[in-house]
Length: 401
Image (tube, rainbow, N blue to C red; front, side, top):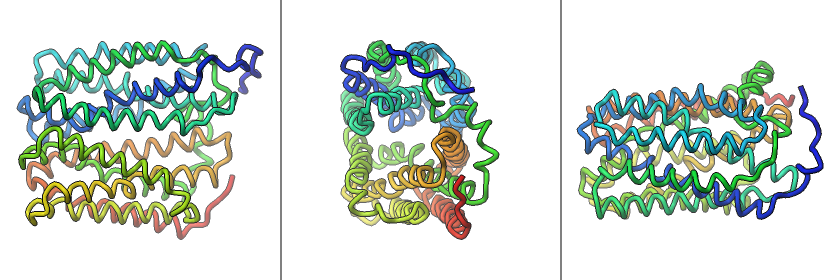
């Protein structure tokens, strides 16, 4: 059922709209920038083994694949998404306090699952508000969204510095403090009313349009992108633990994570000059090559004596293995999917990425327990499999709906 046309009030641009959305993006990404690299270190510091860490990290990923589309769909039905965002941030903050309880395996797993349901929708909701501004007022999305990346960099660096002065045991406190700031900033969210089109991860849109999207070309493409993305699971789960095990300090760990984000931003800045004429499948092939080189090099750097500079060099490949996947998937959707089905297309891609990442995160625990850093080598086979799916997609004839 189509939404009613904009009311006269909704056509008026809220004061300082771009600044307010930029602050929301920044606030959302700071606690995420601490959780991604340092939460595994906190788990290890509390005595959890590699397989337990893998389950604690992967179970929320499986859950959020299911919950996030439904949460964003309900937000689309609310009178105003800003209120939903405030409620979810407050819920995430309250749930995060559960990490201050005695950190038994079941407690940490339960808190992580509950946190995933409340935390993961923050970014899609911020995207939804920002894109409403783009459609209604001609706002520039990238100029607002870039502050999320800048905040992520600062979170990586700041988190590493704090841990170097304290210990890994302070990770929950940093995350909760970050969510306090996010909650305060979320009250700045502009009131825009209901969206004109469904949010990027709307379950309603997915259900309505998925049958027409599930053709051979689209399915193989997003599956290939998801598998290549999933090959990063071992990195996200255990590289911080590995770096610490060979004597690299928390500040340097933060710098290494931040450098990957810098490389990603550089790819976004120079993509049009370098790769804009490449097809979507060519971009994913390049991403797969970048991932393969990355997983091949990681176990060899420290034994070869190259040292920390080698890890910085390999982290630069994040610009290929991750950024080109993000760009490639969006390029495919823009070129082959009409606007009224982009929400469903985004949702299917989100499911493919999320399910693949969760699956390989779960597998990473036994790999790290058995092989240590050499667990990166099996990720090469994962990336190759993803490239094979992309090649099969390339062999199929794209269908424009």
